[in-house]
Image (cartoon, rainbow, N blue to C red; front, side, top):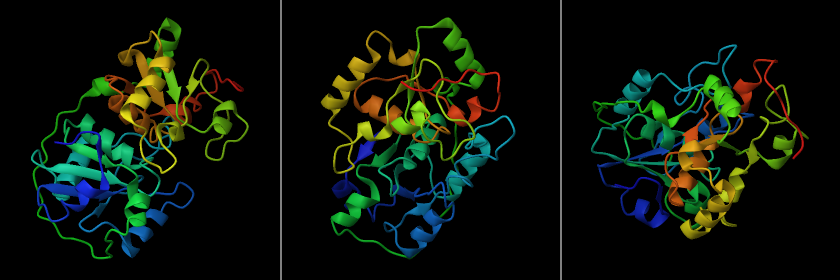
Length: 281
């Protein structure tokens, strides 16, 4: 099975394959219903719509970030209702080069389903190539999705505090440079970053066409960035644990396995005013 990326030609050749399940994860933070509206107007044939807030996250609490991890039992039930079981190859895409679809990729891996891949280039590349779209919503026969969570894939805020105190870890912050240094903050009440974090914007994983860079290029970049730090001692974060998944996938493409997700990320870190905040580079 494909476990990281799938190209548009391969997906096109499997649109009628009953062992493949496709998800549209398009989402706009400033307009949470925009992705669902766009899906109804036109999506890759056979795709289901997975809503970031309603399907791929749990409700926000006073101490959580903006997109807490969903309850695994409820999520597994949803995947089963969407027709996913252990035999299925899952493909996720969005209209933002995988920025949101990477969350679904990571969640399935967390649940123990390795057969999930991101559509390289996403919906934008699919459209540029003139491939089919439909407004028809497919029906599906529910399946039983059996799962076993791998909680070694992520860290809590308490873990992050302990790792920072211990040293020897690297924290890759996938937000834009402007947000990282604290010049702007369009989504969260405090600007800046966790002291010691390194800025690695999501866009650095992509080429000019919105596809992932070649594996050897990614390897060179991450080898320089991590230096002597092992992947297992690397944590990927962002604003709310969404785009951080994109870099975890890029790390795997580069051959670096075992990096962790910080789901709470910046939006959870700042819920406690006593936690330190850094600005600038």
